[in-house]
Amino acid sequence: MITILIADDHAVVRSGLAMLINSQQDMEVVGVAADGREAVELAVKLLPEVVVMDLRMPPGENGLVATARLQELAPQINVLILTMHDDEEYLFQALKVGATGYILKNAPDFDLIKAIRTVNQGEPYLYPSATKSLIGDFLRRKNKSAEFESLALLTEREQQTLRLVAMGYGNKEIAEKLCLSVKTVESYKSKIMEKLQLKTRPELVRYAMKKGLLDLEG
Image 1 (tube, rainbow, N blue to C red):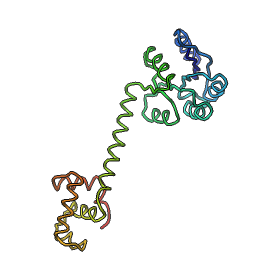
Image 2 (cartoon, rainbow, N blue to C red):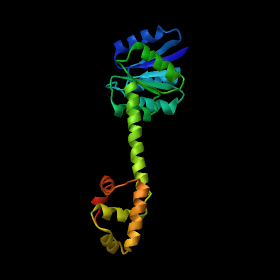
Image 3 (tube, one colour):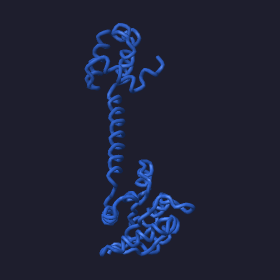
Image 4 (cartoon, helix red, strand yellow):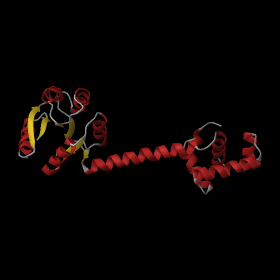
């Protein structure tokens, strides 16, 4: 039997959720709370396996604060955030403070039941659009990391050469500015193109602009 605590500031919602959950043969609501503070107190006392937690419960303590406190006091309890907020920032904050799942209040009843069973196993549950948000954020971070790492592949001299090439200087002018031979400059340019996997000068210029290299003072 999965024991569950419901935390929501609306009595009607608490009652409706309790009826739905108790109708399942493998689930039992062992307590209800009207805000985060009460939810934490009851959870520590009753030790349910899952807490279904609303995000905003004015004027009391919100679900994010309560989830963070539960992680400290009873980390074995899995928290499923049930909210009306389809917002990336709320999602990321909820996962950051330790929530195991995140589902919207307008989700079908069977999705909520599935979510409870999933988080009870300690496995994460996210509604479909939330999954897309997380994947998108991961890819954005990955791309930023890849871009940073690509620039880190270049030596200081190569970065200086890259900047001057992007600014339109020729090999001879670059050689004079960096006190190098023209042959060395040509070698640097070849290495830069190879390391960054670029083939044309316009690509190199766009890369330099994206990296902010053209914003640096000479």
